[in-house]
Image (tube, rainbow, N blue to C red; front, top):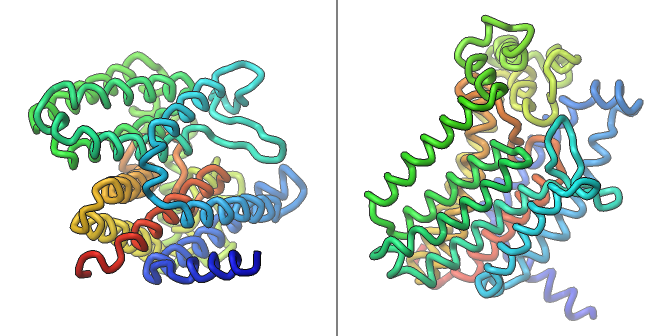
Length: 380
C-alpha cells in the first residue's frame, strides 16, 4: 500500500509544469472572482456570505479526486471505451428529461440530483463526445477522408446528441458541443465541400430555432440594441456593460462591485466575468484573457506534440479539449461584453458550478496524461 501511494505521488510530480502553473493561476483567479461575486447573493438567500465558497471546496475536492484518476488512467483505456462513454452520455441526457429524475430549474431540465451533489449531464457529455469522435477519426480515417459515409455517421450521432440537448433545452451546450465536433472532424481530414455543406445546414437550423422560439428572438433583438428595452429583455446585458464601464483601467477594487448587489442576475455564474472586470478593470481582464490564451496554447502544443509522435487519438482529444475550453470561454466573455446574444454558459474555471469545475479539471488532467505519454517521443 505504501509503495502504491509512493508510486502515485511520483507520477503526480511529473505533471507538465507549464500546464500546472497556468491551471493553478486560473483556479486562484476564478475562486477570488466567484467568491467576490457571490457573497451578497449567498448572504441574502442562504444567510451565509460564504455559502458558495464552501460549496466550491466541496466540488473542488471531488474534482481533484476525479482529476487524479484521469491522470493515472492510460489514454488507451479511453480509446478502447470511447463508444461506451458515448452510450453513457445518451443515458444521462435521457435521464434528465424523465419527470421525477431530472431536476428542473428556471424552465430547463438539465440536472441530476445525487444526494448533496447536483450534476449537469451536458457538461459530462461534452467530454464523452470528444472521446467518441477522437476514436472514430482514428478508426475510420480513410473513410472520413474519402467517402460520404465516413462523414455522415458522426453527424448522425452528433444530431442525436444535439436533439437531446435542445429538449432540455440547453442551447449554449449545443453550440459548444457541435462546434467542437465540427473542428475535430475538419482536423480529421474531411473534404471541404462536405464540411461547408453541413456548416451551412447547421447555420440554417440555428436561424430557424431562433425564429420559431420567441424567447430566443427576444434575446437576439435585445443583443443588437439592449438599451432599447434596458429594464426588460436587455436588462442583463445593460447591467453587464455598466459593470465593464465602472471598472475602467484598474477597477473599483476587490469586493467593491456595485453590480453584484442584486443589479446583475447570475453574477457568480454566467456574468462573473463582468463583476471581475468591474473590480479589477481592463488590466484584470487582460490578465484573465492571458491565462486562458496560455492554457489553450499549451494544450494545443501538447496536441501537436502528440500528433508528431504518431499518437493520433491523443492528439484529437487534446485538440478537442482546447476547442471546447476556448469556445466556451469565448462565448461566455462574448455574452458579457455584448458581442454575442445572451445564453446560459459558464466560464471555465471561473464561474460557480460543480459539474463545470469537475469536467474542466478532468479535461486538463487528461491533457497532462497525454503530455506524459508523449514526452520524449518527439523533439519538443
